[in-house]
Image (cartoon, rainbow, N blue to C red; front, side, top):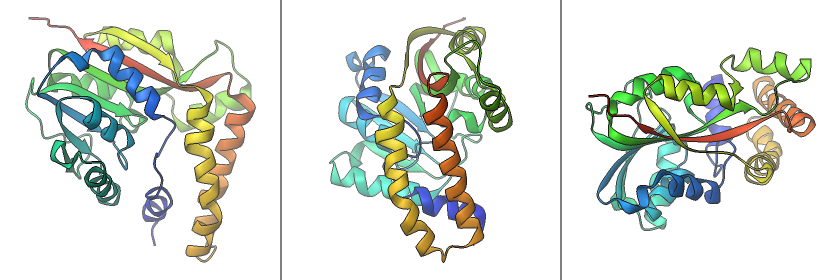
Length: 252
């Protein structure tokens, strides 16, 4: 079994594939102002198994296209959408976020919780902007420095993993540079990491290793996740996920 399939198997039964929370998604929706609108068209890009998608479908009068390149994740979302009675508002698309099937100005909002890093913050914002209507909403959560100075070990780790990590001030400046005006910003609280993401992950370690015969690759995945958890627990005051909500400026 290849490494990507192992990672998929590890994460596909999780409610969330990254830090986040239902209350925080609802807060972002409130800041976006979308509750006042009807018949919205929204893309949830890099949706994983769809925890944010389900909240969007519950709260908003919207048709949502949930996008992830892993069909196994989308199957989980489809089952959950049926269970929660929102299947008529959610369509899944197993495609890359770099090959979105939308026309210019087609969408009222683009959502992406913890996934834009796969394409890069500025690249994603620049490429996705054209799909939004004038005044359309972009809402993304993104790894962010919370302090101006960081421990050397932490700095080295994130420069290896994601060189586009930066402070909120710089992320907001990127949004403005790419034709958006910020309308909301907040830091995800600690429970979004520990209670909603890491603790459920830790509970899956033993079963995952057993299901894959304690293979070297499976052990490497668990070891990497344990190292990430330790890094967060040790240095969480220095970095976190931040939610950025911005509106597309009509430049015509």
